[in-house]
Length: 382
Image (cartoon, rainbow, N blue to C red):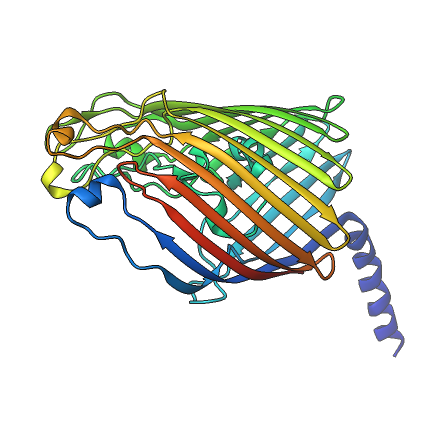
């Protein structure tokens, strides 16, 4: 009996420092909606005789996730930090997938240094306007960062098959400086190693991304620059030459005081524009973006009691104009996309909410047509 008591006492003495020096949190968010989406095809599909699809209803998963995150105090002001998050599809399966944040690193007086799959400095500026609940609200037709084609290109077709948008990037090294009276700087390097070297279009460091941010009370200001360090004159199988030497920048401004909040971004660059027209009969008609592509987007919200109303408007100039060969076939387009969104949210508590949101788009570009969509959903965080 005494031996058992001694064993318990020893175990308890070992456990106490762990409780004090380390913390791990299990967390998640379930986000499901009923959506109606009526989306028209772009000018290219129309010219090919592709009809507009009918509007449809769907049960939609809106980036539900499950994860763990935490830290361990190592002494001397140094801590280990980590996060491991998975996408959880509450509607059709496909759980524990996606490029959700997964990283490990160290935090101390020098700042924070982490490696893994991580949110980008670019998104941490542009995300000041990512305020709606539905996944349809902040995609490739709303901000230039939403259409990232990556640096992984199928040379047999020329189609870019990269891994998503600038929300987060894999194979990344991330550094954040300490806070200097509201000022912080962030830097990210993406290094995908032999994958891209073997294809012949990597310069070693695939992507680098810098950002500077200032937060003072209700005010936010940030700027970010991202560079795709690919090679020029990439030869596709049909002999077409392309370039992956691309860049882009974003300016973000925000103000949040009491029940009011507003956000604004302006973007310009060629990093996130479509690489080509993949339609068979237009083989060789590759449309790489240029630095004329730009976007501005303004959001606002007001809260009263348990209620929040939101609105947004913006215009994207895609720079994807029809080439002379395409124009000769009678395909004409406008390279601007107008976006307008409104939403209502009711908060039952800090963790549970319901929403009703409308997403509108006025466009006649090569790849996108008009859109009218509605989303009615619920979200529970834990």
